[in-house]
Image (cartoon, rainbow, N blue to C red; front, side, top):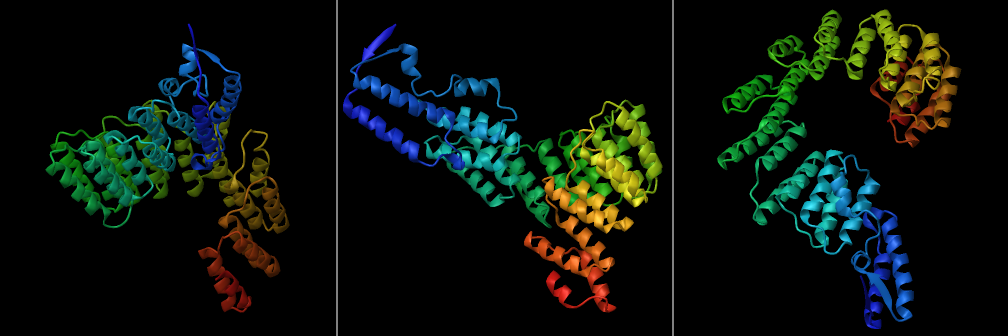
Length: 479
């Protein structure tokens, strides 16, 4: 069914002025105009031309979707799922939402914000939520909880608490999610004494009759473990159980990790033995703990137990174990595992190659390390700045400074920018090899890039100054 209508010239002029104003206005987040905006402009001027001839015939459906710039509406896009949505796509979707009439409800915006928060695009969520408010859509308690989470994750706790105050002002009551998110934010800060504020917030939610959940307790336990208050963390675990809140694998993994960081790996193992469900994360944490404490045999035994119990090791497991073997003088065993991995169907990333190349360089197998380094492209693995830095360090250790210099320049040609560690490695090598002039050039270049000398470089320079091998001006350059 078609219907016929005319638009008065005054209305036409008003539409034109609005579109031109919108066209010239800066788009959200300094993004280029979206395809939908361009489509609308083209459609408008086509429509204007038709209107100037007198009449326009549109179907019922066409007239209701004149402003829609894409075949798929924002509702259909949200319904089909926006998991792992990219920034540009999210901004385009948001722009299509705010030009829709009637405006989408807060529920629609919350779906987009929630998906973005899950992909850790916190700043984008905060920016878009501000734009949403400017377009007249008010927050509800669900979106405010998302804002609190984003502020907390960005370490902006002042703003997070302001969002909670806004929640109260709008007449919404903070719930378990609100308090748990704020507790988590305080504990993530990692600063001394923040666990005290987190506990105060915990007592406040209890006073309000709000029951803490597993997330709340896990956050409190995490904060205590990060401050090495492991006895208090265990006490909080007891409180958690007494309140009828069941600990999950995350709870135990947090405490086990705390024990390992505090070099109390045996205590971590005791807690691990009490767990009914032993998963890969728990094994990885303990294997790393024993590797770092030099108990490589126990780490290997845990690895074997893991396999025998049907818990599949992942790339993290192998990276930890192979690195532990290399660092504890068992390079041959590490190479054996590495060879088996290459024959397996497991996808290996650059991390395991960096570990092996580093182990070879430390084990005086520089030539073998170079062979592996040179074969990376053939294996379909892209070297990163750490790979180059390790190999440059290996060449320096061998005394092949000219080759190290060439590799240093090649990494820049390959689009890999040197970092602070790369510069310091090369500077120390040239200082030790009596290449003071080259060291000076590298120091100047390093400073231009915004990097500085690390503790090892400074110690080396001070030692060389004390025995007269260096001029004091070099120390001034490094300061």
